[in-house]
Length: 151
Image 1: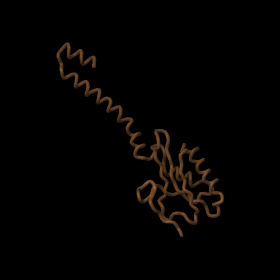
Image 2: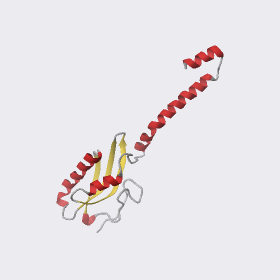
Image 3: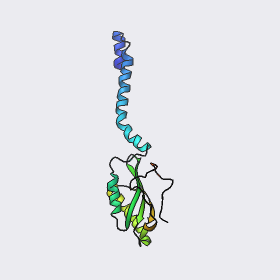
Image 4: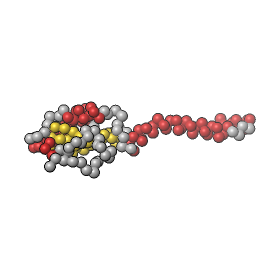
């Protein structure tokens, strides 16, 4: 702005002030566009860029005692923290070990992917959701209002 004021005093260039103001505003906008993507991802509960849902799903399914995983959702909670929500199906005959299996899955998620905020809904393999999507769900909502179970 000192530069613009000097030009106005010396050469009576009245247009230089709004031009410099527009240049400064453009620079600020340009710099903010580089940061806004992460903010929008957090506000819209978008999936983290660095986590692949298929890899997370595979790691969960490979834990001993896990019969299946469905309704898996990943979203960005904060700039450096992601969250996971999923239904975890426990192998038949292993319901007594459900808490230990759940903890093993949580440990795997933390060690392999840095996921420390996880919500796991436990299901017995006999009463698991029928036809549930492995990643997300067919309703497009974070927590579906209803899904079918075996009777």
